[in-house]
Image (cartoon, rainbow, N blue to C red):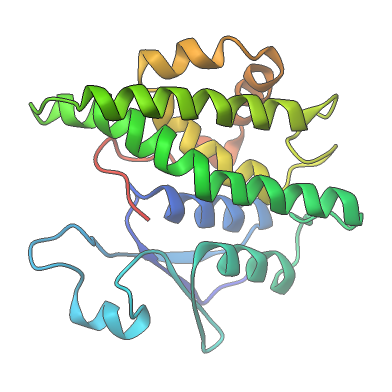
Length: 218
């Protein structure tokens, strides 16, 4: 286990959890320093020195400070010992990167903000959901699930025979999405993706990094 790594962020964050999953899968020891970007007044001033855009996560290791989840997770994979989280094969690596991009650009805004926040988080706060936004998010979420399901093929994991960053990106988004009954109903239409989720949800790293049921943030 390597020591001395610091992760700044909040346990409710999808993107902080992605980094935590990568660290756990690689067997990297780290310290999690809480940063709440939703705190009154916004992110702490000292955090803005680490991340000029005031987002989370930020990762510090060996004097190097990195923000942006994709950069952090690729660094973790390449800088530390442990199982590789990026395929060596060019085609599989491209597929992994493609799935990460799908998660970032399409799954996160729809599965998390469009479904979880509107149908679960707002309800817990006593707020009304936006039916127009929900309808749009449901349609786009189905497109996301269909796209990811079509890429699995006969693989056990999303981008090939081994777990990769693609799995670590998509899983935390599913963890929020499936708190909504609408999300569960959509997933049931995709047996291969459902089988992947059943396996992924029981992985030790997932069980040891469960997200607090609050807001969802980068």
